[in-house]
Length: 204
Ligand code: PCA
Image (cartoon, rainbow, N blue to C red; front, top):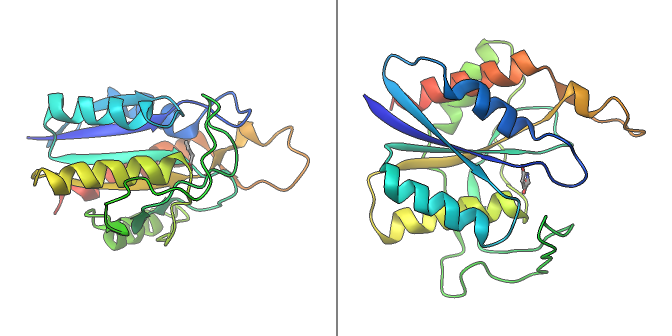
């Protein structure tokens, strides 16, 4: 039996919901034959998000950490390949922080690769007719920062944990009142996508 820590973010940027959190809550109580799921709900706040995630990671000692976040302008579910060592927030976070072009960890490496099977994840999502692609940038906002900080913790402490980040598009209901084109997926599709991501992460 493996333990999976599923992290998700609170709403931000004027949204009332965050699809990552909706999915984590829906999946939390689902029964997986080979895994136990624990969720961490993170504030969209520099420092606090990673502090909470790392605290919960230490307490839970999971085998896998799947970090989820919203990428509102994307049409596909996108496992991220790499986290980079830079904070360059295009908008302030929910605590009002807006660093521009600062390193996340001044003495840290330039980046960390995901240790999740990202290609297999994309292949399985596509087999289920869910739009998916590997992304080569997680941006320079909170999601990239959390991804970088968690990978740094795992590397520095040589923890036996596979970890990575996956961005998911808006839910349909988030786009109803938007004036510009905004791609979105249904609840069923996003929940099924996260279920598949969990399954594939267990197969390594
Ligand atoms: N998405 C943001 C931060 C929180 C979230 O869900 C991002 O892509 O950085």
